[in-house]
Image (cartoon, rainbow, N blue to C red):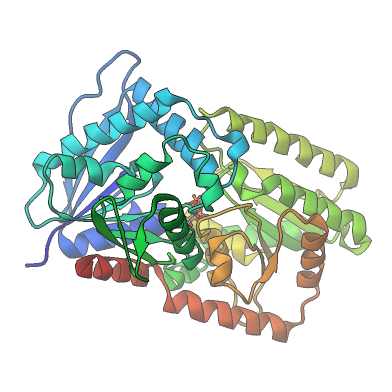
Length: 457
Ligand code: ADQ
């Protein structure tokens, strides 16, 4: 019998409604189903202030077990909002200016990793294989190994690994590096992330690298890139679902022949949304023929509302949106539509299809799945054009997109204008190239190649 898979991630996704949650949740649920697995992590619940967090809650559904823990209010503050989202998240996205180096955050982070490891350990079987996800849980394997675990444990980082100089700004960087080495396989989205990680480990910490394995702190780990994909075929089918059709129709009717540009992101300062608004404003300023003929729809549900930077960016965007509409709008034309709302994945597919231009401008992004979803939702016979930031991990794969520098609003406005007038032949060719790669490197391919490498590591 194949070894059981244990997935460990900060949030345990919905197992029952995984298809609705989409992307990663589906991929992990499929992997767990194949191996009859266990998914372990935070429940998403916070205990009342001053209350303990209680024990592990287990649930079983179609061969998958979930085991979750609540966080105390203090843990949520120091570990989740603190070290994970105010220190590692900004730092790994090159926002040294937003990085909070509070020692209490780091201690809270370590404590939660220890508590999680202690809670998982009694549930482990000898031949389990563990797959740990993302920056919240870097010390997880080291902590488990200190408790005697000898399992095969892999790690995947969903966000970028930054260049060496940036990592050095973290007071605890060498401790974290040691924690990384407790894994047997370290997975990153792109070869560039692998190179930056190896450069840091070798040149700062004296690790040795032989092209596939890194040796440091008395341990050896395989290091490789596994670019995550989407289920491109399923996403393309969403366009023809009831919700997809409804949104597509609704948007098309409202557009009355105008061109729609779409942006879809969690409201996060790494996604380059203010820069995107500025580029749209530049388009209207520099290309008068766009006025009255183009609309920009930005869908950005609020996220991490407990962190101050997130409310700041929210008010900044509200200001920019009303200024642009105030300056350029007409009684019968609103240039910019800005919605702080989550849309179902099917409805999202319909919105992408109704949009002739997909505008994805992160200042840094591990991969960026929106770029892939936009392409998958297009009509191959008359596809829209993707304008994509060179700082998204996906730009390394999606070379047939119009690749731009998101800081350069003039260049982005030019790309939007190019996209508006791109001939059908060129749009088809670019789309076909992008789609071919999306299908060849989909999310199933991603998890299979990761788990195969882990089995061999
Ligand atoms: P995120 O930073 O969340 O993920 P991204 O890869 O773009 O970024 O994925 C976002 C997902 O949320 C997409 O599937 C998108 O459709 C969905 N989404 C966004 N806005 C939505 C809305 N309004 N309604 C409904 N759904 C919405 C992190 C890393 C990325 C990496 C992924 C996966 O930051 O770089 O690509 O993990 O590894």
